[in-house]
Length: 62
Image 1 (cartoon, rainbow, N blue to C red):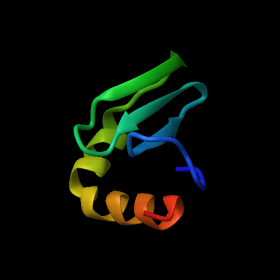
Image 2 (image 1 turned 90 degrees about the vertical axis):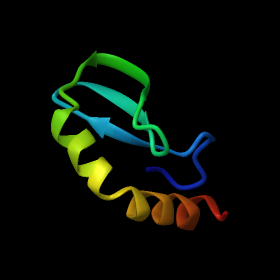
Image 3 (image 1 turned 120 degrees about the vertical axis):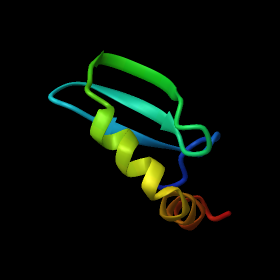
Image 4 (image 1 turned 60 degrees about the horizontal axis):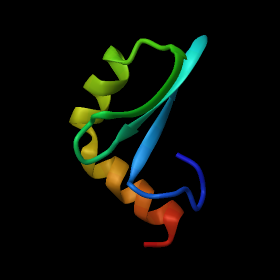
């Protein structure tokens, strides 16, 4: 996540060969560039949605 990032609430996954943006609410991929393996990140996010929402609100000022 980045400070004062745009909506919808999302997090960034950075890989060796690419990057992706993933919706916090639905865990759907919003954008992707290059090749990035999202399996571990999506598993972690599914278990930590409350933390992701809290951090989004903290960083976005919501």
